[in-house]
Length: 215
Length: 212
Image (cartoon, rainbow over the protein chains, first blue to last red):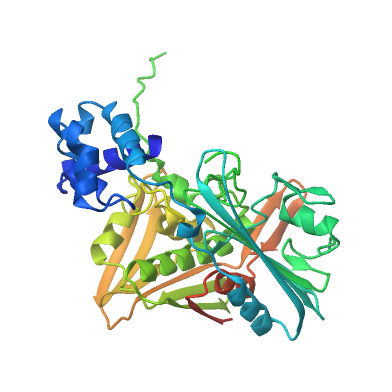
């Protein structure tokens, strides 16, 4: 609810500084699943009857944001993880083949789930067996990170649990500790780990370590 | 003895973006990673700008050593950053973002990326201007922080033929670290090739080229 409130009050501030004061119906139609006029009218009818016709009216009664959110949720389906997109098996394979001399073996896994907050996420994991030392590529929302985004998050596999992506790979003997920087792998593997989620919350100011329990 | 008449001064928080220690707290990385921060923020911005405009991103990263400086240039084929946005970015009392209020899988949404990129070279001792070329204008932006913490800019603009957006900066290649036991130089930890490869790995729709 705080996010919707933040968005509405950003619009209100924009209108106060000369921007358009959006009608509530027009605002609602911007959301996936609510773009039809009929649906937007059904969502907004009680608000408009009560005098909340434009976004600026929420400044008079902040509690109405909760009503709007509930009505929007009732009239639409929760977004699926697939709506967030992903990189995909083929691209990671092509990337490894272009970056390294020889890819002997390649595996890719993609899993989607829901955070405790209800927001969807997708996790991609691509591993290439090479004949040379490789690298670990970590990314969140299509952007590389400064380190392991799951450091501090316990990853549980069928055989062992580990702290973060590096810990998991290390337990699996795919990423032994080396003398180089965090992303260099003395083992002959290259790994790409990618997490896609809406509005990620980070545990650090460098926007690297994801809070997988919140958001 | 005369009584000290105190005056309450207002100190701008903008200077936080021009102080290495405070930038380190702001970005969450050590000063030796500041060149990497600039590269990441500029490429993130370029990708976002191209995608927003519906263009297939073509991003060029160039890194070179010039004297004791790292020259970092990032250019793209986006619509070009409008001059009014460049002006708004220089207002350090606000954040400029079209993504901060939306819940979507954004690369970064704090609205302070270019502010940080302007501040980092200054914080490390560079007094060279940050160059932005876009929409037919070459912006040369040179920050200056007065002793009271007030932030000022020399912002020179000239007409120039441009394509997309190009941002170029010079920053010292080494930090001068002083300790109780003496001083030493610490290099910027910038593996630009790894960053370029990483961006290529996570952006199938983009073409990332690297010259270094």
